[in-house]
Image 1 (tube, rainbow, N blue to C red):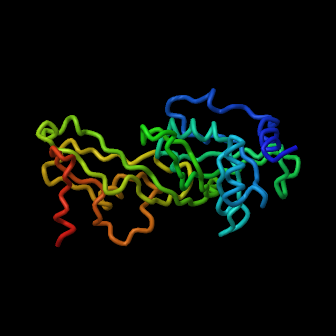
Image 2 (image 1 turned 180 degrees about the horizontal axis):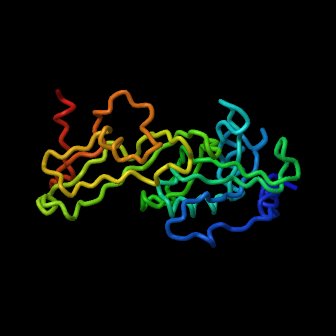
Image 3 (image 1 turned 135 degrees about the vertical axis):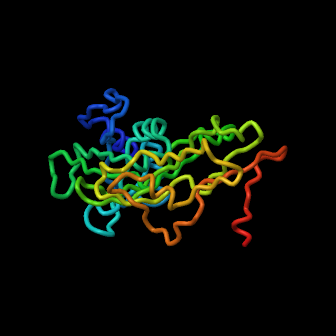
Length: 253
């Protein structure tokens, strides 16, 4: 039996209840994705290509078997793609479980093993050249996030209120200087799906900085890894016939 056939059999033979049939609005998770451990033969570029050919997405889990230890895994590509389609960039802030049922995990031989993780980094790849927005997961880096312990990840930044802003019809737009911010939460279940910035009342000098984002985070969640909280995250830009023209005056001081 070849590697590809073995991969398909390992995944298809798992006793698994599809969590996507039970999704409800407002469901906080955790979501479940089927996974297998990768051996040396399935690591590296050639191994990753074989994994993808088997319908899986290669990745690693950081901290699963010790601090600083990265464990190579492969996860169900269909499940990860559907989860990404539903959550978008917010997938990094949603706790999920990797189901290793049916495989021998050290210490869990013959038993179900479903550690909780967050998708700290997700590498995407366009499906076609026609649309840059039509992407699929290409590689993923998980971070072990057991319940009750702090976890660091990124949370997407979302802007609302553009249509209500008086300057929109005059050509006012908003420039993202960061699509996500790095945070640490006291517990995984405290992670917000996103940070929402309301620009309804922005004037022509409207700017939202990291310190403003910090004030929007829920209790138990804080920004992580930043030295200067005065860094802008979202600011007003202006549309021209050549596209959007941001105001970079602050960076020219």
